[in-house]
Amino acid sequence: MTSPTTPRYGQDVPDTVYGYISARSQGGVPATRATALDSARPFRAEPDAQERAKEHARTAGLTVTAESRLGFTVAGTPAAYEQLTSGRLASYEVRRRVSMNRTRDVTHLDIVGDRQPDALGIGAAPGDDAIEAVALERPRTPMRVLPAAAEPPTVTAFHLTLPDDVARLLHATPAHDAGEIGRGVQVAMVDTGQAPHAYFAAHGYDIDPTVALVPGTSPTEDPIGHGTGESANIFAVAPGARLRPYRASDRRGELTAATAGFLRAKADAPQVLTNSWGGDGEFPPPGPPSQLDLIFALEVLDAVEQGIVVVFSGGNGQFSIEPQVPGVLAAGGVFAGPDGRLRASNYASAYRSPWVDGVVVPTVCGLVGLLPRAQYLMLPVPPGCAIDVAESLPDPEDPDGLVDETTGIDGWSLFSGTSAAAPQIAGAAAVLLGARPRLTPAQVTEALVRTATDVTAGTCHPRFGSRARLGPDTATGPGLVDVSAALDFVLTQNP
Image (cartoon, rainbow, N blue to C red; front, side, top):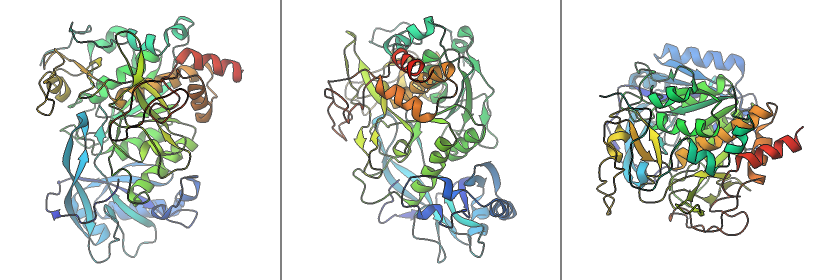
């Protein structure tokens, strides 16, 4: 995330702060000084340094919440961070694009003081060579009571149903008919939570107990409803997959522990790891990635090098580091209209990476609605959750006053975004891995890219303005995922 040039600091610091500690690297170069995203291996921590760094963090009063080969995440009071770093925690506001294509002032945190580096959100631990940097969690955005019914309500607005419409349009139905449903493939999803819903029970989907990363939060609740709803996209494409949900949200549903969730999911070694969230920065960016971006990008790159198929939303008008990491499947958007014709979704981000040579966002596309609200997929959510209520009411920023025609307490909502495309693509990867478990992330990506359905009409989000054309393009990459064609490709190319 690009830092503002002159932040205006305030005192709005929460009681619990989430962060990441980078331990001393084996390669001798701190993660904050990485110059390219070629490999995460040189930035893996020295084992002794990692243990000493954790001990220093615990002594300061911080709790270790997850760890990886590069570092670990922590949670604690502002005072604990101040004891560790000899700095002071302060807040500042940045104008950012958030959910539902809105822009808002978003509160960020920084460690300030004479001994702290200039990079916003990065702190140092004086006198301890085991710790390279202390990074505060940056805000992330989901790329979007009565028991809910297993069947959705009837609405007049054009929309897609799950699982049937999504499976049909992504050409997954022939694969299902042939018995290829991603049976047993472990798909991890880091999001706002995974709440019980009659829809999942009625279809017999395989869902592990949720892992909650924020202390004091319930693993069975999803205050926003984003994770619950978007996870249905995985099963529409891979009904035999095993979902492993990770709740990275606090009690209000905000994604305060996204990094911890990613690290914990990565440590559990799923075959696929899908993430429907990200940050937002200036585009085009004024310079190279920030130190915060580099630290998290290396953690993502390490997951790919671990052999995990990593999927990230490309963004709903946002620009962020996550989908630009080499080897990541960046999910873009294609809209299929009532007549079945395909066009680029003007709700989805699309651009050539200004930071990583050869990377185009998206890598491939799923199904995404259109501006202003992308109310396109009928998805199950916890009754009365934030999305259930918000989508049933007019949006003050929407001049057309659209609503999804559901109620705010029925447990169903129309929404989409690249948040939906990412789990759809994760489901496609699961189908391929169910048929060929030894496929590498690169082989999965090649199959999806080589067999995608070309999209030749429409433009992506107006912030980027790329137009779809014949052949691969910036707006939609190679096009819309074709699950059965990709399956045929791996069965032929990788016997």
